[in-house]
Length: 376
Ligand SMILES: Cc1cc2nc3c(=O)[nH]c(=O)nc-3n(C[C@H](O)[C@H](O)[C@H](O)COP(=O)(O)OP(=O)(O)OC[C@H]3O[C@@H](n4cnc5c(N)ncnc54)[C@H](O)[C@@H]3O)c2cc1C
Image (cartoon, rainbow, N blue to C red; front, side, top):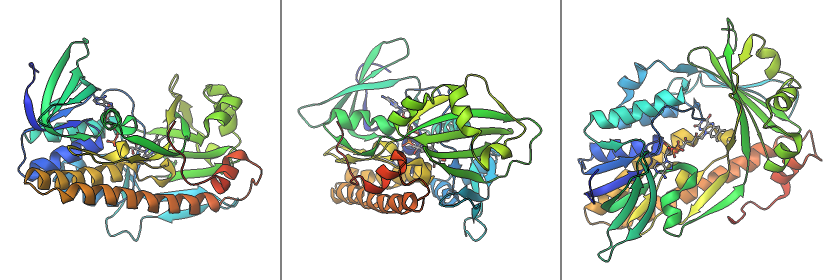
């Protein structure tokens, strides 16, 4: 990348939201796009289970046939222990979109990036957005750095912030994350040696200190996560695999189902899983999409679909704006906020169903605390 090359649109972040925005802009005939991705699509990513609606989103991006050839694992629904000791099922049998999926996230994100490049979009991986300035004519000067630390400037008319929860660009522009909670998830990987019996369902199990989930991934691997609050995780030492696994062993359904699974040494890691809405979601020359715009509790299993849908909607608003119509940015921001409100109502409903531990701070907070907290 030389000096200060100019683009119509620069997309910061090449995850699901950024790649969906790029593919969608391309389908609208906009080609002067650069996607800037900090990673190189090699390291572990979290978030794997997607509902059947995902299929329709890939169809509208024009990558459905290519996705099917990638052979991710089908998911037929969810089974859960939530609100009682009984196992409940919510299957996808009646879905008009077919089954959902358990994705290999590294492979899926790399796939979307590859499809974008195959369609002629410029994408630079291993390149991090650092800072931005607004130039006198309103254009944006973005400062990027490559893995060697060398920095470059790129000028664009418009930017889409798809940097995930960090919302790095939007926050540089003065936006704030209105946090609802600071949930985190301690997750580990397992190999299911000779254990094809583990169901092709996402498994959920509520516990006194939070809730567990597990999903079988392509290649007979398993991801197991525990969602809780940071103070609880600290007090219980849950970042330590032995302490975390001791809690896992207490589960009634999940641990027994993992009989033949073997821990992938060193894989336990803590992931932020906050819920928040960015305020504002759009500026004069930019939009945020995916987790940069709003992040949902992973209980919803909607993050990836939302990222793809936001990318598609943001691209439509951006295409309108490039054509001179401004209203699309406001409509986009309003729809992100309205969907966030409906997520908050669903979140309250689902956490409210679990009443077995009335004194547990984890469940009490979700019942009693105000719905929104301002970012520090
Ligand atoms: C524990 C956990 C479990 C989850 N489980 C599920 C699930 O089962 N199903 C589901 O649908 N969702 C799940 N999610 C949510 C899902 O992972 C996210 O909603 C989804 O990844 C959002 O996509 P995105 O493209 O907006 O952001 P991301 O996937 O975070 O992508 C952002 C991209 O931006 C890049 N980037 C970041 N900063 C910069 C920078 N400064 N410069 C350039 N590039 C940058 C990153 O490298 C990354 O590639 C889960 C999340 C968590 C935390």
